[in-house]
Image (cartoon, rainbow, N blue to C red; front, side, top):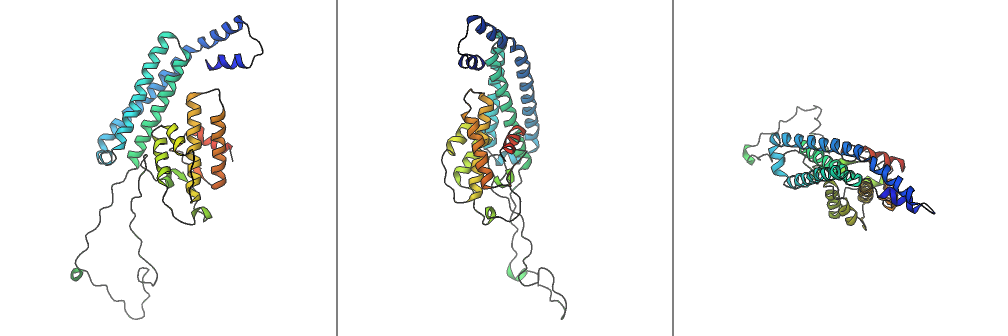
Length: 291
């Protein structure tokens, strides 16, 4: 057990009675962890039921985003594994197994909720309006002499364009809505550049809960646009933080790297704000600590 290993590593000497006492102390925490795992599984089941209800009223959005079905399957498998580990942990009074059950249930909850958010945020593509033949177009009325021209008639003033749907990532949102950057003009926003494919793929993996793939995709990157660089550091930081929270490993290097990546992200974009819808409160607090 992790706690036991730390006791052994940090002690110059240790006796068998001490080891037994430590094992008994950890063993005694199993019932409490079992209750926590049960509560986490109940929340995941509630999130799953909410998704099932929403799917019936969002059939068009569901059909238009086939990757959501794959994400639902992944979340369901995590929930099923959590239930299995809960049963095993309770039968053996195994604290570690119960901890894993709790972590898997929390991960499934997050995945179900992200799918719900994607469905709620989806918008149907704008249908192009049919252009009438040239001879059937209404004639533009001529303003009386000396009349003030309207806003659409003034030279250099174009009518407002219809809003188009931006490309969707795995969560149903653009990266710009997931990662908020103040609208004040800055070098970061000096030009519009589409996010690189590797950044899209890393973000997609993150929203699927595949945090290790996110880290692998962003292990090395070289983007020309500073906005993409900031976003890459943010996703790399968030993925590392999630892995540290789930695995609770003795090695603190993953968490330290997540902190370093958050700092680099802030250096690239001092005003960057991770969206509260797509990043957990714990991570947002961790990110703010790096400012």
